[in-house]
Amino acid sequence: MKQYLRLFRWKRSRLLILLCTFAVIWFLFFDTHSFVTKLQLENQKEELIERTEEYRQKTAELEQKIEDLENNPELVEKIAREDYGMKKADETVYKIQRSEE
Image 1: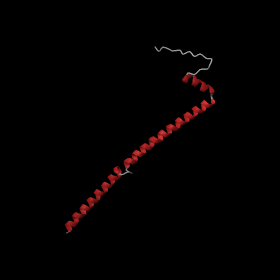
Image 2: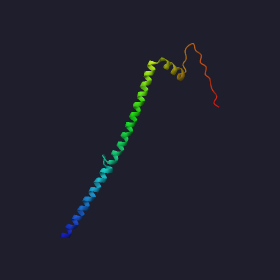
Image 3: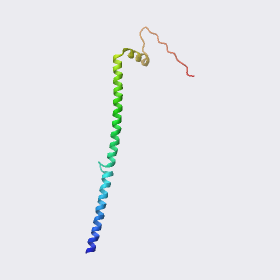
Image 4: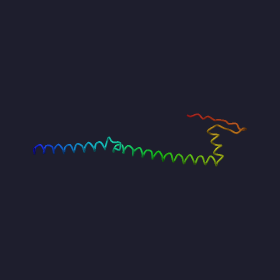
């Protein structure tokens, strides 16, 4: 009988170690709140913070451009002439093509 109890204790401790190991592996890799998932979400969060900062900078630049266009009629005329090929009614525009050599 003693031998049976000793064998049962040994199996019980192994079973406990096995269950603890399984629980640790489960929570590290497979659970929805696993360590791997937390790392992936943290990386994604950092990328989104960087993109948000980039968009804030672009927004500030565009707001500055809008302000410049609203307050500077010469800039509006320059953009209209250069980018859109507009001209005044009594003007003649000559385009000079340069050869690239």
